[in-house]
Length: 117
Image 1 (cartoon, helix red, strand yellow):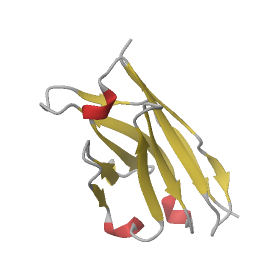
Image 2 (cartoon, helix red, strand yellow):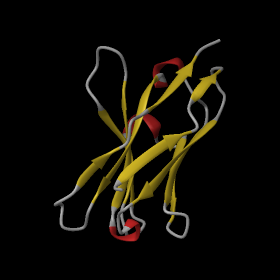
Image 3 (cartoon, rainbow, N blue to C red):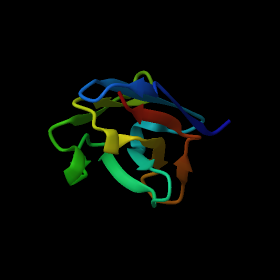
Image 4 (cartoon, helix red, strand yellow):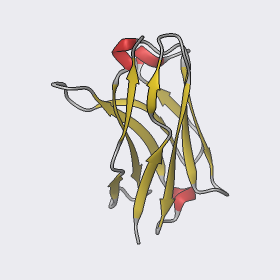
């Protein structure tokens, strides 16, 4: 079964940290570009970070220096380490995977991250 499953979301205080993980099944994981997106209430979904099959990373300006994306192909997982969290980081975070050909574009179900005191 082809799917992406996120975990690791939750409630954290401002300045705190969380690590999200996304496990993949049913795909040739190592060849996929993997990414994290987020969607806050009333806003459009936006790119947070992506990592290619060659481990090239791209970050949105608003997370540079605070978030780190990494992948472990042997685990078939991609992670998002989030430090120095701010209330404006509150959103549902989605895992995304795009095949090398671009033919397949997969989404997870999302995991809620809430940053609040």
